[in-house]
Amino acid sequence: MTEARTMTINMGPQHPSTHGVLRLVLELDGEIVVRCTPHIGYLHTGMEKIAESKRYQQVIPITDRMDYLAPLSNNLAYVLAVEKLLGIEIPPRARVIRVMLTELTRIGSHLVWLGTHAIDIGAMSVFLYAFREREQILDIYEQVAGARMMSSYFRVGGLFADLPEGFEKTVRSFVTTFPDRLAEYEDLLTRNPIWIQRTKGVGVIKPEDAIDLGLSGPNLRACGVPWDIRKSNPYSGYEQYTFEASKGSHGDVYDRYLCRIFEMRQSVTIVRQALERLPDGPIAVQDPKLTPPPKPMVKQSMEALIHHFLLWSEGFRAPAGEVYQSIESPRGEYGVYLVSDGSNKPYRVHFRTPSFVNLQSLPRMVEGRLVADLVAIIGSIDIVLGEVDR
Amino acid sequence: MDKLKEAEPEEHVTVRTLRERLPDAVLSTKSFRNEITILVRAGDIVRACRYLKEDPDLRYEFLSDLTAVDRLGEHPRFDLVYHLYSLQFKRRIRLKVQVEEGEMAPSVTSVWSTANWHEREVFDMFGIGCEGHPDLRRILMPEGWEGHPLRKDYPVQASPKWWEEGGKSD
Image 1 (cartoon, helix red, strand yellow):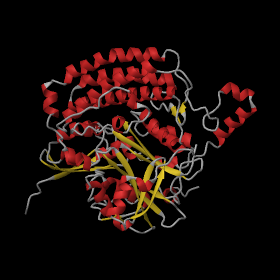
Image 2 (cartoon, helix red, strand yellow; image 1 turned 90 degrees about the vertical axis):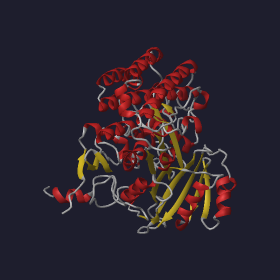
Image 3 (cartoon, chains in turn purple, blue; image 1 turned 180 degrees about the vertical axis):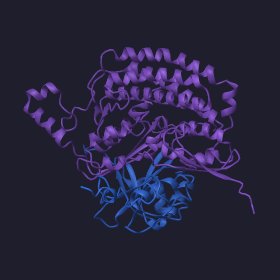
Image 4 (cartoon, one colour; image 1 turned 135 degrees about the vertical axis):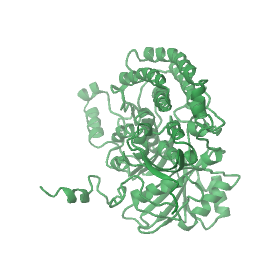
């Protein structure tokens, strides 16, 4: 009789370090992971299907709920895709505000990643600090959009409303204090011997494997491939900002950590530049067929009333065609593939979500390593299950 | 709105090279909003992808996205859509393959590992199988689910089967 050498166990879907509802079937030889099979779909809510029955503007709140840690990034990718389809350019003020808010989103998302990743590995206090700073970003969301998490602030053609009074002051105070706070996190982790032991040389992936597996964002840059969509294919005027893309070299958990810390610093400089150049002017395209007229006008002008009524009852029509627009979300390439048949609803929307693609590389990173490393590696890929399952 | 200047698809370096090297593979080309779409014959998709990935002047080494579109009422019914990206030349290209209902499409997992989950999603959501896929299972829907949700003839609201089983009481 031969003795079974390996044991198969389930990790998740309720395991705290699987960040939501990821289920991993692990084949273990003692503490070593021999095979890892991810099972996903627990949060599948058919967002792409729902989007087909919504008018173009109505899809925006659905995108918030995908990557719920970076709602404005998702909004941006979607509205850019629709704007490309329509062939419109939005006013400069709206573009700068979009850049500023998506960069704040990146910081907020990376902060959640940092806090939860550190707590997974056992560094409890970072979590509390990171969430303290993230709170300020949620306050900014609340100021502009009225909601702290599902902000849906961007609209096709511009923004939902102009910035409220006091916004610049809040953001300015955040970007002044935040770099020091970032230095505090680094004091806790970057040269901490325990942190280094748990992360250096763990979950290594070679650049050619990373490209083959479709990794993007900080995960890919940590391998030394300097691909940042904001640099390579700029959108929303990113070519006018001075910043650097992060770059690692070892492709391990530690380099992914360094890349994200670096990105938070760069985001701060981008937000600063955006604050400096914030122009005056309209916040949406001045086209009554696309964006609603100001409320007072609806009460006075018959034409404005008709436009308002049509926008809310029928929406606008987009020319038939197909576009693909991708942006650099906090997690990587977030792409929106949009097919239009000329009606007021998208014929097909596909969201190329970075978490879905990045998660696929997990088995390649963990096989042959310890279960404890698995926890560090899942955290370092920075997945959001809402975005994996859509 | 439609005054934008479109690129001439046949002048695009990718189209020119592909037409020259694999003349039978390219069925048609199109440009919309300066995005080039190449319709490739289904049987040639793996060859075309491998060529686009490996050619030193094109180097589309990154498969960004792979999905499908149900064009219910038209024949062939399904479009498989591949979004390729070249990290070196910072270029994007869209490939398309058309398959009829019940037909299999060739799998590109031998060219890019990342196609694995994308093709499983296409199988799960549209019921289009990919020939040569190492592990063709549903990915988002539960095992044993009936139907393919993203098909246009699948209802947007709850699947009728779901209700028939437990909820016949009213």
